[in-house]
Image 1 (tube, rainbow, N blue to C red):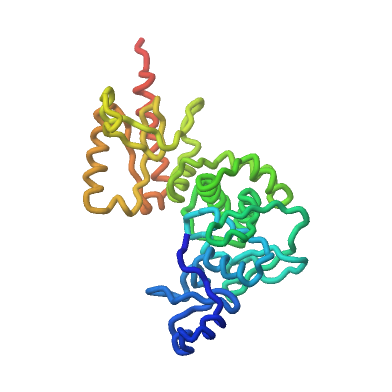
Image 2 (spheres, one colour):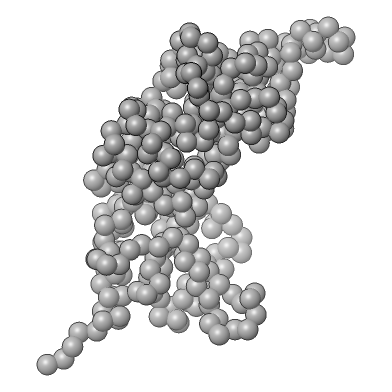
Length: 336
């Protein structure tokens, strides 16, 4: 969560502690009449053109319209969705019976300090999850998820994704969102399916929920899993975050272990996605040692990074070859 709380510009000016010169040069507007001190290294084009993160903007708009209900991507941000997808989307408020502004993120960014207003439905269930602003009413997580999924699948909110065979980019983004949102909330697949009724085709939603896996630790891990999703023969199924003890039989619970991002325990198949932190000093040695420890235990080990998964065909070929070797090892061909 951000730590800078928006303040009323008029109150700052009236306090006598901040001059007009400072207000113009050292503060930025985040909502009508609300400002924050300009962050170090501030870039007005950041966050999809909205300048500041969505939660800070949501707080500011709450101060302007305290009776409005926060929804959409800003609600997801309040619930802890960590990737910056929320920050490049407008703040959606449910308020009265009016409708104002575009839910298309790129169009809304032309007016970055304005919220998008939609009518407040009767009987809408809300929560108050913000400790900083305990009166801030927010739609439930499942409703926020439904709003976000609708904007993803209709192309209203986008971000760059790798190509995945057999899937549209909107579908890939939707599964990335589902993986991440189910990690940061207690929302269930059944709740999301219910809330998307009337917004998203039920067959599409069921397929996307079946592809989701809240074990994924990053959007790139989601992409890697989707690329290889159909390669394991039945009845085998991919497993996320398998715990592998590198010193089996060791008495201490602190014995060395590793958690492959994707794999299969019975087949002894481990797949890792190496993010940028794997290039850090010392991490390459850890990865090298884990690789050889797993190989000594009879595991097939594959590692991919952002560049290597740009070629999904090559990824699938490498994984398929590893699966064939693993299957041969588990069920060697019979002689005669």
